[in-house]
Image (cartoon, rainbow, N blue to C red; front, side, top):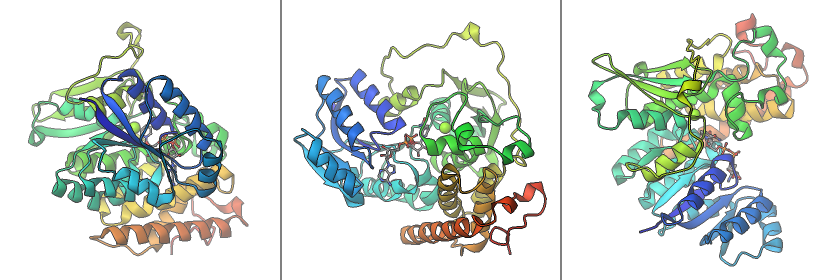
Length: 412
Ligand code: NAD
Ligand code: MG
């Protein structure tokens, strides 16, 4: 029986690759809802492509109001068309969904994912920021409702595959691999002058802009540590990061007898997306295969948390618990957007986050509302710090390179 799949963030990098998996497995799926933010033009294009493969979604949501109006003007789509954040939540919680692929970017995923859990719908989760910001509320809610949260992230998919048939009590550690990003070998001085164009060139993966910058700062790996903590329920001390520039081993699990299992494959997100939708089975595919004999040099290094302080900040926030990681996520979203706009430097990203962590009131056992409010307050603070800092960009220096001298970005 085909299952009804809805996709949040259908025009994004993960969303589009999910559509490819769906079209490659036409007997497995019906499409429920597709949601997008602003790219109504891309949505129209994908609807045409889907139709040629015999797929017509039940409805679509365009979160942005002016894009919604434009879409209504140009589209020939006959299904339901909704607008706004409420529309996204309605699609996420639609009773006809058998499974939801959640690929929104950032905190925008939290409320829709929560709505899906309340409805009892299993979630294939790409949107890691939901667990980073709100894991303390999302995971207990999912457990209470018996809702499965299935990993889409390649590292977590690898761990899930390594854990198949194993006992969690026998896991000694989870080893998350990181490509190290484009600046793996750069000095602090070089990192200071990184441009958005340089940071947007990831060596191995083609992804949305936000996660590409997060990969360059290693914040993405930090978020993945937090994601692994919530998904697999192992202590933070059992999660390790290792830099593996080739991105062939997607992650590993070490067991109490010293045995280590790894999952390998070409860097192709369609594989983990497909697994999240098919597990415990696998869909046959014609995705490109790995040539094992061509793998000459697989290398591994410990990460450098001095040149890449975002990874340290993520570990620290996990140790602190409560709303700490929510603050890190919100400050990071503003920092990344500001970096992409050219208003702050690459090394100002961790500096801004650290300042927000120190200034925003911490809540130990937050409710969903506490998390939403903390996210809002942190964004407001980060935005005002960026605005004030813009007048003196030359002194926006990271602590790691000596004393930070901008009063707006110095911790009190
Ligand atoms: P993307 O920027 O390519 O796409 C994001 C999608 O979300 C788009 O469809 C956009 O329209 C929608 N969206 C963005 N902001 C929104 C808002 N405020 N309201 C409603 N819709 C909104 O991002 P991506 O690279 O596909 O990443 C999506 C998620 O998956 C992120 O959390 C990312 O960390 C995670 N992820 C991505 C990859 C990858 O290879 N791209 C790998 C692992 C995990
Ligand atoms: Mg990943």
